[in-house]
Each structure stands twice: as C-alpha cells, then as structure tokens.
Image (cartoon, rainbow, N blue to C red; front, side, top):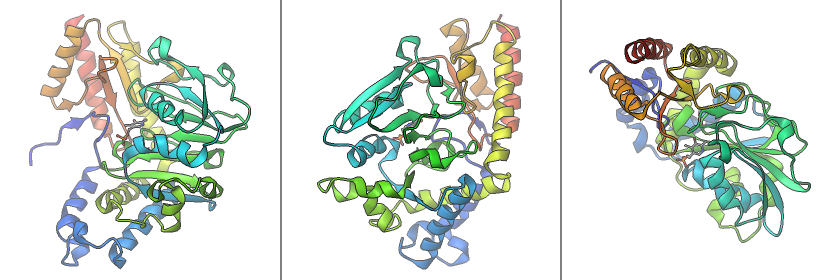
Amino acid sequence: MPERIYNFSPGPATLPVEVLEEAARDIVNFKNKGIGLIELSHRSKEFMAVAEETETLIRQLLAVPENYKVLFLQGGASSQFFMIPMNLLGNGKKATYLNTGVWSKKAIKEAENFGDITVAYSSADVSFNRVPQENEYNVTPGSEYLYLVSNNTIYGTQFASFPEKETMLVCDMSSDILSRPLDIAKFGIIFAGAQKNMGPAGVTVVIIRDDLLDRVADNVPTMLKYKTHADKSSMFNTPPTFAIYCVGRVMNWLKAQGGVAAMQKINEKKASQIYQVIDSGDFYRGHAEKASRSMMNIAFNLPTSELEAKFISEAAAVGLDGLKGHRSIGGCRASIYNAFPAEGVDKLVDFMTGFAADNS
Ligand SMILES: *Cc1c(COP(=O)(O)O)cnc(C)c1O
C-alpha cells in the first residue's frame, strides 16, 4: 500500500487508519465468525450487539442523559431539515432560526413548509464570516425551538458556546459533534451526518429528548416520525449496518484517545497552529472573524486566485489533499476533524510557511 496522504476533505473525511483496517477485516470475516459484517442480518444477535455497543459508546462519550434517545437514521443530515419541523411544528406553530450559511438556509426553506418561522439573525451580508453573539438576536416568543448550526463547515465558523436563551435548542452538529463536551440538556434535538466527524456516509445520528416523540401529527408518514424509530431502537426497517458499525469503531477509537474533553484540547492545538500561520503575516487571510473561528474547518484566502490554485496543486503534490475551498466562497479550506492526524497539521503548517516565503 502506498503511504497514506493527508486528507483535508470536508466530508466524507479522513478516518483513523486502525478503524479502516479493522473494518476491512470485519467486512470479509466478522470477528472470525466465518461471515462478513455486511452480510449479517440486522436482527442477528451479532449485529444487534454492534448497534448496542455503538449507542452505548455515544451515550458515554457525550454523557447523554437517560431521557434522550439515540437514533440511527438514513437520508443524510439534509433529511433532518424537514423531519424536525414535520415532527415539532405544524398548524401555525413557531420556531426561530439563525442563518449562518448554506446548511441553515436549507433548513429554513424546509421549515417554512411546516410552521411560522422567524430568521432572527443572518450573516449573509458578510458572506457568513461570523456567528452571532447572544445579544445580537431575540427568540420569537412562543417558539417551539431555536435552531442553529453549531459549526458552519463551508465558512469555517463555529459557536464557541451555545445560546443561553430559555428556548429549547435544536442543533445541526454534523461537522463538530464529539469534538468537545456538551450540555445535552439544553437541546431538544441534536443531529449529525456521520461522514464528517463520526464515520462513513450513510447514517445520521439523532439525539432526541423523549418527550418530543409524541408531539408528531398523525398524518406524518411512518418512516418520518422519530417515534417510529425510537420505539424500535432504529430497527423499524433495515438500518445502514456498515455505517453504524464504523461509527462504533470510531467511538471506540475516540474513547481510547481520552474522550471528547481530551479531543477538544487536541483540536484546539491543531487549529491554533494553522491560525497562527494565517495571522503571522498578510499573505493568508482567514475567512472567519476571530471570535467565530472554527476548530474543525479553517477557510482562508491567498492574495490572488492564481496563487490559491497554485497552493492547492503544490500541496496535493506533497500529499496534502483536499484543500480546495467550497465553491460558494472559493479559496482554500483545511478540514481537521477529530481523526485528522497532528502530523498532517504540522506538515501543512510547514508547507504554508514555505509557500508564503516563496510566493510573497
Ligand atoms: C455536510 C453537512 C450537512 C449535509 O449533510 P448530508 O448528510 O450530506 O445531508 C448538513 N449540515 C452540515 C453542518 C454539514 O456540514
């Protein structure tokens, strides 16, 4: 096998190599049982144990309280954009949304089909380079929930802390779940597509407070009710078995790293190394305002788009892959989720320093 490259892709993203190796073995011969992991019935005792272990590890790592369910759903994080308002709104019910980029805009569009939505804050006029402070917006009275995206994958912005408003929070944590400790009790629903910080594409993890399960209207399709999946421990229909298995192995790896508090320190160190290079001169310009900077995705520009193209191709040539920014803002972006190795950050920092010196 050739040497692994450093993959800065925003998602699907890099995974711990030991997880990939274990998965490769288990796909062919699961725990030496003479049957491949992805051939197992989802109702077999072997797979039920896999699903249970995955859930238990998520509960331990995030300290999920007893009165919350952990669900493994399909349809990507994007299906949560409509599932949430379909289950929680309807009939003139209100919700407040914060618009911090593409992923919240899409969620707002879907929610408007099911309720009375207020967009209490938007950073659209500053190309989503920031998230709001607590005093910059109000929650519309009577809102069922306040919706936010904790980390804006495209722009590299992140809420450093969560709103302290009275209203229950609903949060898209697709790109920073398990990167830092959380007080789950503030949230009604947390969801995350696995392919950024938890595993491969194919499963969406939903953490939902159990009193919300009964709010849903009768006419919502069975598959789109959280209650359906909660009542059957995510086995109402065939769940994405391989993705659930991989998430479990990644959780096991994360536990061995010391859990989310230890991971937060590692993440802060990795991100600060890159921000230091950005701040050390005027060659690189960070996209995000400093107070809104993400630990997971670092979006930056070079003096010209020609230099950005040169940077991306020269970086790829030395094994630093996936540094092209999202098409909506251009430039460069380094995605450095939990599993992104510290050595890859060191290598990027050296490369950035050298590139600036050679091209200033
Ligand atoms: C990637 C991403 C999504 C979309 O996820 P899908 O699983 O592709 O639907 C939603 N929200 C955020 C914050 C993301 O980063």
